[in-house]
Image (cartoon, rainbow, N blue to C red; front, side, top):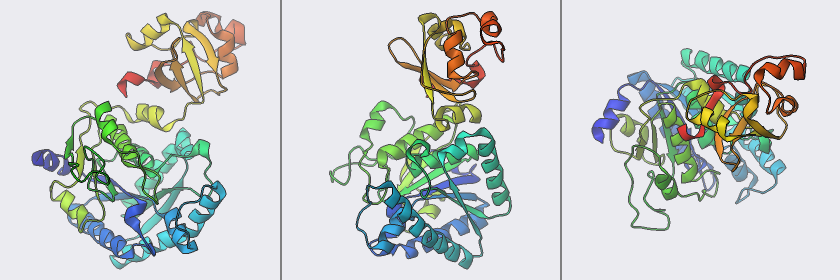
Length: 379
């Protein structure tokens, strides 16, 4: 296992480091001592190993909670957004000060899922991040909690870190939390729980082991972290989940020490664009297909033609993501649709040669082209 770590780490240049709220905060506010220690480790690794570091940082709402004297996250969205606004300035000021003391500059990037769902904005974000890395500036990314609404939320920063890793073609994700990694049981409830040092593939059995109980300050539990590790493994990126409260944890990881849980990447990675379709785009509707179309998609890797469509659910536009389901409503694939939902309803069950006659125009023969389609059994 040690050899696996060392062989992976020796090729790493670009790293996404996700830092959880429980790591960044303590009882009376931001944990400034820990933030300083982490920044020292990060700057050391940038200098000695030439690493490019992208931080995905939680802590804005948690920082706001402490500043406002509250003990727990309120249920009201407007209150959560206000707390993020209160806490974000303190969080960034802390990062600015500690990294400046080590001779490094930082940049704040606030995003919503909508920013990464739109392909043009996705690529613009990518270009901005690459420019900052080229300037040796450390990007610090967080969800824009002050304006985000449910339909454009990432869910938690574990999910956001996975999307950023794919966006930037990172070589490694390090997820720093308040426990040592993935255990075979919840170590907070079972003192005999054992740490799982290596996960070759995230199976349903592994997912069941991951606790879904979030901490008091954060949103994502171990289940969220394991799902994020699974998502990036699909595009060929390993993940290490480790304890961010441990002294010099970043240095220990890059020394090859067996800290935390290492999730190995899949040997045949999914292309970045397909990963974006599968994990970043939110499906806006569903298309039900017949058995013939199901076989064409699953067994033969074909595109979805209008002739095999039985029903359309939801409203979607050209370029939106849709879920393709069978008669039993089992999800078969997700893909980018070439026609509006109202037009798909008009041409479903018809041959491609009839599209222009029915609609008065024809962009494509396919409703979803195979190049814009990801099968669920590949996820």
